Length: 107
Image (cartoon, rainbow, N blue to C red; front, side, top):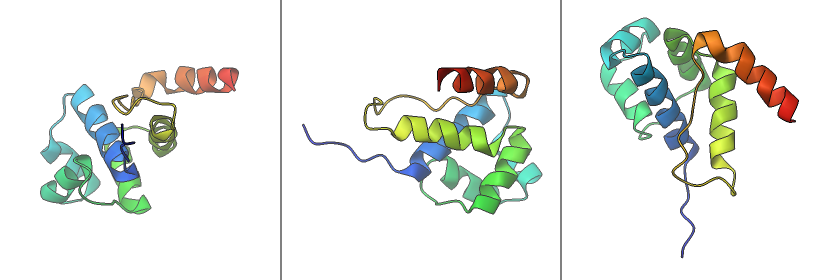
């Protein structure tokens, strides 16, 4: 079976979408807060556009999530031993410290 290449932009987009939908927020709410067009945000979430670090930071701020957590989760999902279908999980703001502490303890 051929190995499927998963792109970073797709994993990041999935993580952003999961965070947004988990908060029950709309694309319009986040696009307004992040000062990015609704269409462009949609393309970023679908992995069709490569977002700059500045744009990722603005979207994460609008979602009240840490960019570092998004990147760590994306890196974990991209590991060769990780199943392709593993969703990126971004911890809600009130659970960040616990998730970060758990990662440090596991290292």
